[in-house]
Image (cartoon, rainbow, N blue to C red; front, side, top):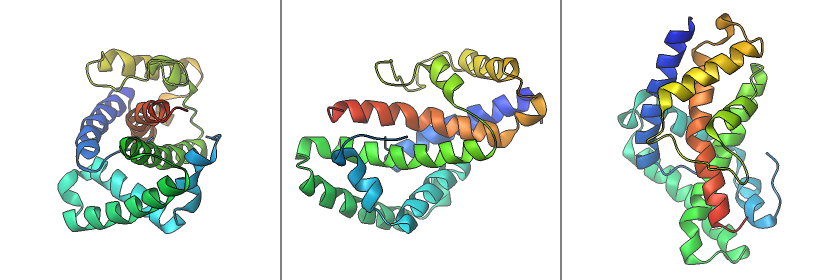
Length: 194
C-alpha cells in the first residue's frame, strides 16, 4: 500500500473515531498510584478484550456496527468496575467521568501500544508531532492541521528507515487509534490530579 492510501485510511479512522468517542465514551505504560491502576488491574481480561473489540469495531465500521444493547451492557459492566474502584480509591462524583475516560483510554492505549510493538512501530514520533505526554498540550485532533501532522508522521517514519511497504493500513490504523485515545488519556489523568 502506498503512503497516500495509508494517509487516507488514517484520516478515515480518525473521523470514524470521533463518532465512536461520542457514542461510547473513550478513556485515558506503566502507571503510578493505586487510583490509576485499580480499574485496569481489577477488570477481567475478557471485559477489557470486549471493550477493545467493541471500540475498534465501532471505529472501523461505524457506530451502527455494534448493537446499542451490546454497547450499553458492556458500558454497564465497565461502569460497575469503575464504581467499585472509585469507592475504594475515594474518587468523588465529580471525578467519576474523568475516571471512566481515563480507564477506557488506558485500556485502549495499552492495547494499541502492544499491537504496534508486534509490528515494530513506536509512537514516540507521534507523541512528538502531536505534542502528547506529561506537560505537553495533549490536544485532540479537532481543529488542528491534521493533513500536515499526518504528513509529518509519514515523513518521520520514512526518515527513521520505515519503508513505504511497511506503512500499510495496519500501521495507520494503530496510529489513528493512538491519536484518538492518547489526549483523552493524558487529559483525564491530569483532571484526576495525576
